[in-house]
Image (cartoon, rainbow, N blue to C red):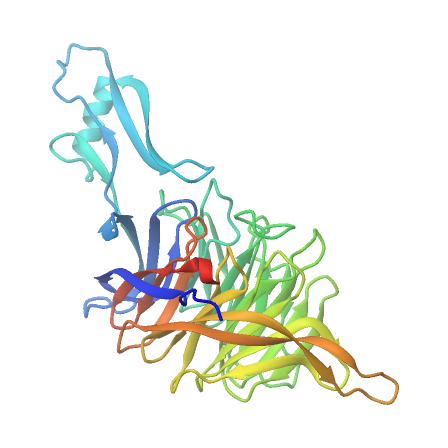
Length: 429
């Protein structure tokens, strides 16, 4: 028996948020993250907020970035002056943050006019990048999955069915905007960006109006694919969507989970429903073990606290895809996320503020076949619970892994707190 201790989830830091968080996401290739949701105060309950935070020595801090420093004490007789622009950003390749000074000469009169008119300039001549974005509609979900490592644009869905893509450095006007759905966008996912997945960058949205749509930001207003029930069929509330099988330029699938327990797998290459099942309880979240690989494992969390793991590698005529179910929560199982550096490891969150760390493992199972199919051993899926941690008395509704630092995670709970965690003893996976 191995003497290696179990991997542990350690809480590094937490912070109170001035919003009700519906999503938290690491900004790619940086030590910063965003929390998005709606105003938690009584003044404007429908206002949408995106708040940017950074991490320093394990502490969660507001982001206050110096943008421009002016030399305001130069005589007016001077024709021009050089001033320093300090851009605080992360190199596109990603691992270290540096100040990048750039000297630009401008007419002094234009500088003085800008200093006097711009509300963000302080008396010392320095302006700071706002760390909070406020919009008139509450945000429900977001993703960086369809952006490049250089751009790092955030795609969001709101409570009125609007899809927007934002440049966090210049957020006054969205880069892309579409009236995607008639009702709230419950789920969103992206693929083709961040060097994750082949093919064009695309965004998928799922809504209460019962439709699942795929969007390409190069095509204005209209989706590139629209999956909706046929005329005469009930439109179920779509709670979650996820991309998968993006293993070539042509192959791509979308999985959608619904309030009645339906799980549907849409093949975007052939534009058909490839597979569907029902897990008898509302599906809160679905995720593949990897977007950029052939179908392998699919994990679904449900309203009654179950975690379903499907082995998608082989379909069996009698039993379909093999599924293993666990019930770690008395209440809702909210979110599932696979560790990007080790896709056999995944984490789930529960309605009582608990996180569970799991690992996929393989075993062999003798399946009964029909008369025309001989019995044989087939790979099935089992899950091993590695460890748990309790962070809150309220549900943890969102979480995200850092793609640069293995085992680093953020999560946000409905008691208006954001937590940073890390996995210790990772060598024991």
